[in-house]
Amino acid sequence: MSFTNETLIPCDKKRKILTLVFIVEDKKILLGMKKRGFGVGKWNGFGGKVDVGKETIEEAAQRELQEECGLTALDLQQRGIIFFEFEKEIDELFEVHLFMATKYSGTAAETEEMLPEWYDLDDIPYRFMWVDDKHWLPIAIAGKNLKAHFVFSDMKTIKNFELQLLA
Ligand SMILES: CNc1ncnc2c1ncn2[C@@H]1O[C@H](COP(=O)(O)OP(=O)(O)OP(=O)(O)O)[C@@H](O)[C@H]1O
Image (tube, rainbow, N blue to C red; front, top):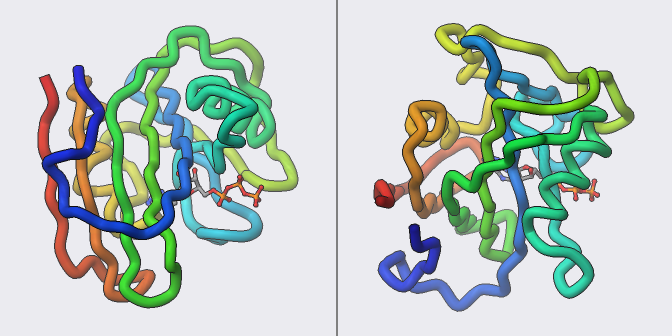
């Protein structure tokens, strides 16, 4: 599986490397409502910025999952990479590394950053999530790997996007 981005829309903006982790267990998915900062009020997976040079992307994914809801993933699987570009509000290209896990230790608990809740896989609250999520989360849940690039005209509107399935 290759997560290089040569075939995606070229973009010379400074990159910000982020992680996003979803836990799926028995037809349920663990989401967290962001209580502060970027994406406040939205339901999403768990993740945040990678401390580049100090940790690997996978270590960052585990750290953020632990910090935000108290879980440790036992079978973290990389599912893809998603680029987000913003025409207005943000001058960086987000490079989000997407992970899924079905096994974990710990019990999901509310933290200062996130309110976790299990949702049925057929009742994912897409209307309260980032508008891009509905385009790629079902693919990731189906066990497929993907690479995508979204361009936002404002924080609520996708101007265009490209999505590729990876082998
Ligand atoms: C634009 N469309 C998007 N769609 C879905 N998910 C998105 C997203 N854009 C960012 N994300 C995710 O949102 C989290 C932000 O994390 P963010 O709060 O910025 O990071 P971190 O916890 O390190 O911040 P602080 O330490 O509080 O500054 C992080 O998981 C990142 O992958």
